[in-house]
Image 1 (cartoon, rainbow, N blue to C red):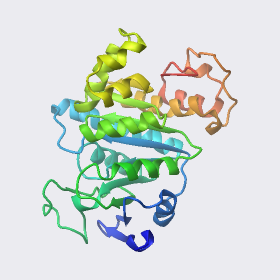
Image 2 (tube, rainbow, N blue to C red):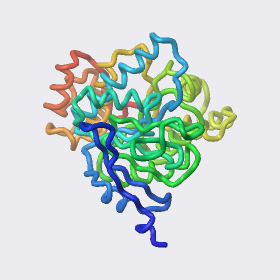
Image 3 (tube, rainbow, N blue to C red):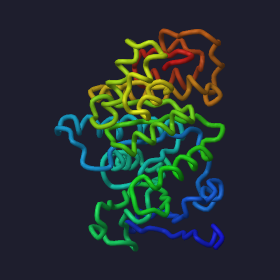
Amino acid sequence: MDVQQRVSKQEIAFSSARKAPMLAVPSDMDATQLLQALGIQRPKALIMISGGAAKIRLNKRRQKRLSNLFSLGIAHAAAALSAAIMDGGTAAGVMKMMGQGVANCGYITALIGVVPADKVTYPGGPAEGSIEDGAALDSNHSHFILVKGSDWGDETETMYRSAKTLSEGVPVLTILADGGSNCKKEALQAVRYGWPIIVIEGSGGEADRLAKLWHRKASFLSKRLRSSIADPIEAEIITDGKIQLFPIAGAAQALQARTSLDIVARHPEHCPGSKPKTGVTYTSSLDHPTSSLCNCLCSHFNLDLVIANEPF
């Protein structure tokens, strides 16, 4: 059977006001055809969210801080940059936080959820609670890609292949919070694509494991670093990754600025101002010659952040 004959498209009606297109696809579907079939337009930037999909094991204070980082930080940055967001799409963990953030911003951001088809429930599909180790789709997402598969992680290859196609010619930034073994594999894929990663330190899970290893990096010579890390996937992430740590106690406004300005600093063609000079480090974001967008953002945030040609 042809790949196209194994594709199913429908609209999920979460309510009379919230509807989202859903595409059920085989894992080997061409990414360009997939995105065209779902009707997703190329954004000006792409933010990948990788993180815990189960109950986050943080105290209430830290959960609130993490939720604010997503809803007041990342969601606002995506809206300001006309960026799309791609994540795991379920109404759990950081994906639910991301959905609420997009909702709070007025649903102006494309939020694409990619999931294994046999693990999720939704209106008009499998009933909530009917799938062992399953999860409901989040109603605040704008698009869904259901990849043929019966295990969490079966969707990862399709997700990153689609993300790479969608982001051709535009900047990509990955945010990692909490998470387990699947998030580790997602972080590895981001590293291999050359995408920078902001790790939310203090959010638990794989994010904190990578943060601890990253702190160790300065004490090892590059040749010894990889051999000093037992897990080969984590070794590659730490050795080759462009990683920045952001504390869970940090201000949401600071994460918004960091996310926005990192994309602008790395891709000045997305800013209406002039390009930065090669090799120059700007000690203040207001000195950075990417002009109006950077100046507007920094004035709005009232922050003085360090921006360099290679900020990681």
